[in-house]
Image (cartoon, rainbow, N blue to C red; front, side, top):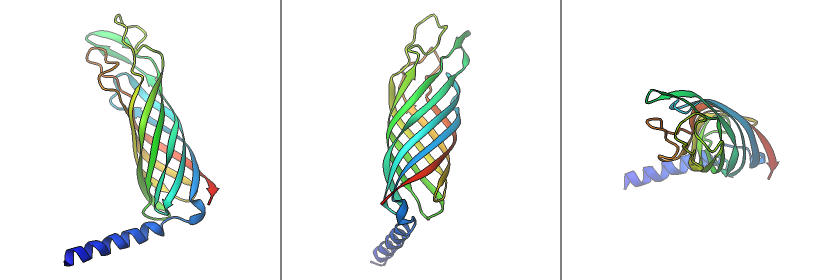
Length: 193
């Protein structure tokens, strides 16, 4: 019984902290940002550069839900597959995702993720010089977990962005990668109550 009381007390304290974490005038906002990163693993892409746009509603002052989209450009890289040089094409990712954020305090550490579908755009072929024409995937499950620092106006984050494509777009031993580890920054535009 004592464990149950302690658990209820802990949940109550955590809930009170989340409720008092954010100011009420920033309940609805548009987040506009940019991200830069390195492709991981670096098989068909080397780096990524993107723009993000999201709408967030603070359901409670410490918990936000919303929708997110944007565009991230992946820069293709040359690779050697089975002794042959492969010139991989650039491509882009356009996510359509749900946004979830947890803000333990009004200013400071936060974490969250975007989860949805990532549409892959660009050349239909994975590489421009392969003998076998391998078509790139059209998209897949999209996830972008992030952890960072926030204040009233700005968010700074370390993030991992990935579109799961299964075995589509593979060339020999080269797996098709649409994932990057990077840094992101966004500015909050309040929409009022």
